[in-house]
Length: 270
Image 1 (cartoon, rainbow, N blue to C red):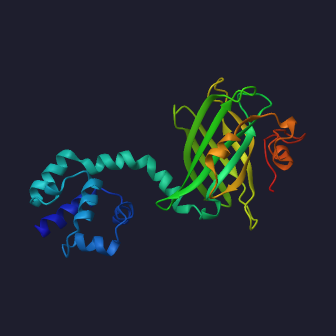
Image 2 (tube, helix red, strand yellow; image 1 turned 90 degrees about the horizontal axis):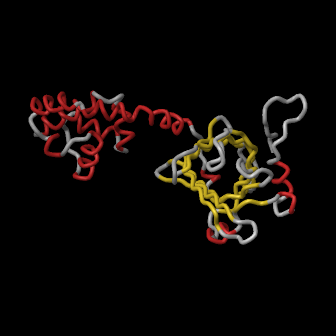
Image 3 (cartoon, rainbow, N blue to C red; image 1 turned 45 degrees about the horizontal axis):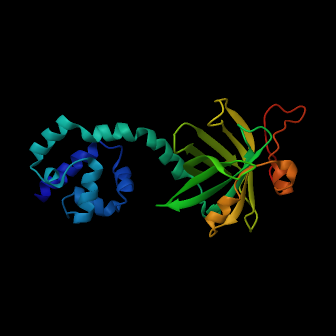
């Protein structure tokens, strides 16, 4: 049966891009996996379950006589189907492989930018960069409030990915409640020992008032890794920058002006 298992595993792997990629996606040691392929050892129950889940077969199927298994897989071609489904994700995998470490940037932020749908008003939202399973992710909450009563009139939640490529921090987010918009940010990294603000450019568009795409300057103010989230959320919403509520350096950094002689919206390195 061990011979049949190793032959069946080799067949499944033949439909994949490489053995190295299979090991990486399964998070299995390459040397150990080679012993499975060579028939020198059998996986533990835990690893067997993960292998079967990855290839889309059951444990009883992967242990059958090889000729029968080959006929079954030829008809089903599940590994090919998985490869086709995973092809778009391979681009994200490439970005993750080239991304530098982002541990310094893990924590909570206020995000500031001029609202795309409320002219002249600055949005302060609450965002976080966090690490899970060796990758870095992003969450952001926008709360619209009535300026008179303070009542919540709208809510947008965003989730996304964070990369650190060629000395720039990139964040790609999508609106996760209605899945109707994507925003992309490019930020200067911080070279200071104490993280304060990140500045950059973002592209996107309003979610409720029209669909005109636009670009704006954006600032992320670092709050810390352990904060009172409820208290921080109370400080989010739309603000009139003329009231002096915002920090002067942030308020001036996010103004969207193009100087004479310039042709694109840019932001100077801090």
